[in-house]
Image (cartoon, rainbow, N blue to C red; front, side, top):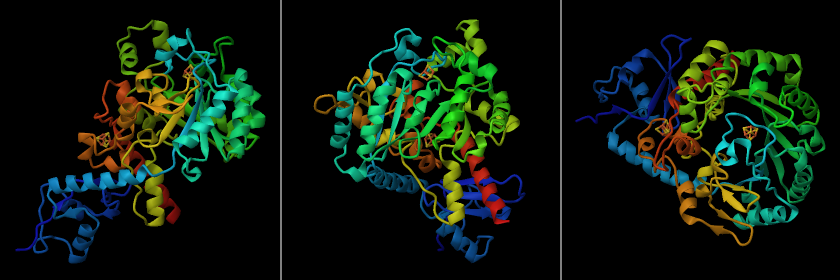
Length: 472
Ligand code: SF4
Ligand code: SF4
């Protein structure tokens, strides 16, 4: 009897709304991508079973659909097993990639943002730790990086400067020391900054030094100044904008991130226009994106239930990912949101006719990220720095690992999270942000979908449209 084939459970259909009758098929473990007609899509209904005798398609088309993975003779269980084995092998490869280092310069910050993710470790701005690196701890941190990864080629060349606020004027001396010493060791730097004191660091910016800045601006001046509050001066919008103008002239790349919620989402268009007026887009090194404002579940619940002060509720209003994507579509569909790498992966695969790049983790915190703080503690995730229970180890004297915690972080992948192992998006999504899993009360076995299917569909279509436009 002729072998029976069934549609693979890992086939992802993305309907191209502007091109009636066409669906972009993507396969979740072969990495294939093809355009399918309505006739093919009818055959790919989950309940259908075909052999070469009864498939209502040509033999060549059926051959191709099998070769690309959309039809399979494996059972559902066998497909899950296949993904599990693939994940295990691929994750081993991912662990051989370069180790990525971040210096948590200080927990202190000169802003008092009401939604600050560090609020729970900073006493909401009232007990900010004043601990900062000194020259001895910087020297020790660089040494510790070499002990963590002795092979220079397996240490990422870029170190991220993080906080709190790393680029506060009062940190100037130690930042200069870090940059000069780091450059002599072959590193360059990125920094995540609020941009308020950037004028004190202009000489340290540029392609060979601090080469990239992520700066947060929360909408137009009116909104931003209510939320990004300097502890002494109050309003911060004008000063940050002036600093971006100066910084762009140094050749540094700047990505402006707007923490977006229900209050400011409608002002993103005007903000982008303002950046055009200022000439920021004349620099190829400038970009802007809108990021959904997230918080710890307890904080989000408080705001949603209106139990915080009415003053705070006037300042921000959390949106779900679905609400965010919908409002973005309605208001500003050309303003970049967070695509978690989907656009680039799909666009590259289309352009180069190559298979899509997979990953079994959401971010390097799950394999090879090391954040060194001024207390001598090592963390893995930007969202959990300062939370002692999430500490991977210490480095000030000899490196001492908390093996249990390190293993929890560095062994989480889509194969260890039950729901992800059966998910057709698994090798694209990577199981969701571990920091957000924990902020929402989950464990290392929990997934965090965050409406991934909607994000995937949106950016696959954008990548396809760009590819098509370039072809014509
Ligand atoms: S700038 Fe960042 S670290 Fe500082 S208060 Fe605002 S959110 Fe928190
Ligand atoms: S987090 Fe959700 S979308 Fe992502 S792989 Fe896991 S189950 Fe799939």
